[in-house]
Length: 109
Image 1: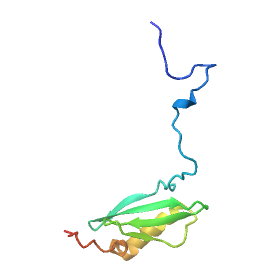
Image 2: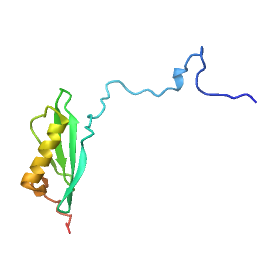
Image 3: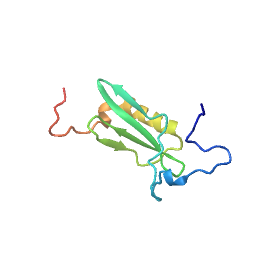
C-alpha cells in the first residue's frame, strides 16, 4: 500500500491555484495586550481593553456591560502602565465611574 499526501514533496512545486488570496490593503485589527482582562467589582463587570496604538504606545479602553466605552485620551508607554491606570481608577473612584447609562430597554437587577 502506498501512502499519498496532498502536501508537496521535496522537489515539487506548490500549486498556488488552490491558495486562498486576500485582497491587498486589508488591515488587521489592533494588537491586544495579554494584560487585557475582564474585571468584576461590586457585582458589576467590565472589560479592560489595552491595545497597541501603532506608534509604540498603548491605548486604554474600558467597556461596560451595556457596551459603553471609556477611553483615555493619551497613550501609555507600556501596557502594564495602562492596566495600572485602569485598576487605580476603578479602585480609587469605584467601578461605577466607568459604567455608562443602560439602554432604555434594559432593566438592571
